[in-house]
Amino acid sequence: MSAQLIKGTEIRNVILDELKKEVQDMKAKHGVVPGLVTILVGQNPASISYVTLKIQTAEGLGFHEIQDNQPENISENDLLALIDKYNKDPKIHGILVQLPLPKHISEKKVLNAIDPDKDVDGFHPVNVGRLMIGGDEVRYPPCTPAGIQELIVRSGTETKGAEVVVVGRSNIVGKPIAIMMAQKGKGANSTVTIVHTGTKDLASHCKRADILIVAAGVPGLVKPEWIKPGSTVIDVGVNRIGVNEKGKAILRGDVDFDAAKEIAGKITPVPGGVGPMTITMLMKNTVKSAWLHIKGNV
Ligand code: NAP
Image 1 (cartoon, protein in one colour):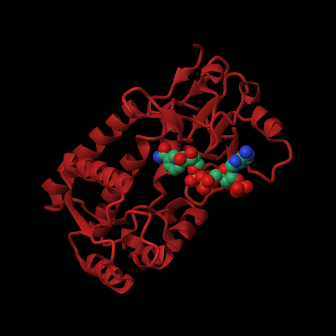
Image 2 (cartoon, rainbow, N blue to C red):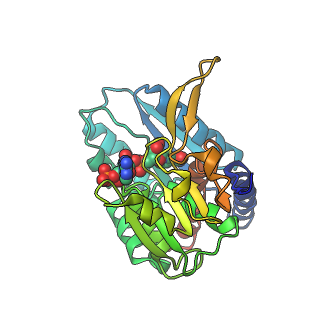
């Protein structure tokens, strides 16, 4: 194997250690710990396991953490009232509503009801706008793109002037990471191209990428011959392609990893690359929110 593996699990552990020290410092100096509420509606098994992981991570960092489980049949108005309660709770700095929500509830209405200064997921239109403006305006970058940028920076990849190609234009990954990499500033300042299903010649764009970020959700979409030798490849895709003998899901990325690792300079594995970064960035945003609230910058 020629490429250096960008190990998300190792980078996650380093960031969590940094955050833990920051939380201890905050508590010692200000008597405040970051507060995170996770609102789960219903009993979707995947949602339960995501929420459990988020809560365990928050507990490990010493957060004030609330898991607020609500029944599947909660009304939209009651859920909005609950969000309003946490918007006003000074001990809470981050509000997370686990998606998907039941069909009778408008996800848009619910997400837009979260105070943008507590929207640590970064999905509120106000925070999307702040991300677009860039610089000091950015408050809570969405977690998966923020994790991708950390992996690029912490793996020592030069971003200034780099040709970045992003495969995918979703609101949660493709569009925000493209904006973030194009901004003027550290860990960015790149020349960015976004490609999607309307792109005429996907391969030709990927081939000139110094940094190739793939978030399409199509297993093995990116072929080894599309990869520029020595480039950094970030594979965001998580595709279940079957189950192993123990009944566990077999996961594959959007890149043909085995062949790509012989050509790329640096590459993320799936699993163990981008995956572990998302919750870590949620924690980072919550710590940031607590500092902003302490300093009265909200
Ligand atoms: P999405 O909303 O389905 O968007 C996929 C994007 O990829 C769309 O913009 C689509 O283009 C584009 N695309 C799909 N097939 C393509 C093709 N053959 N050629 C070119 N472009 C293509 O997905 P998403 O939410 O961004 O997620 C993408 C992948 O990342 C999924 O596998 C998901 O599970 C994974 N993911 C992982 C994490 C994590 O690890 N923490 C977090 C989020 C997502 P159009 O717009 O033209 O349809």
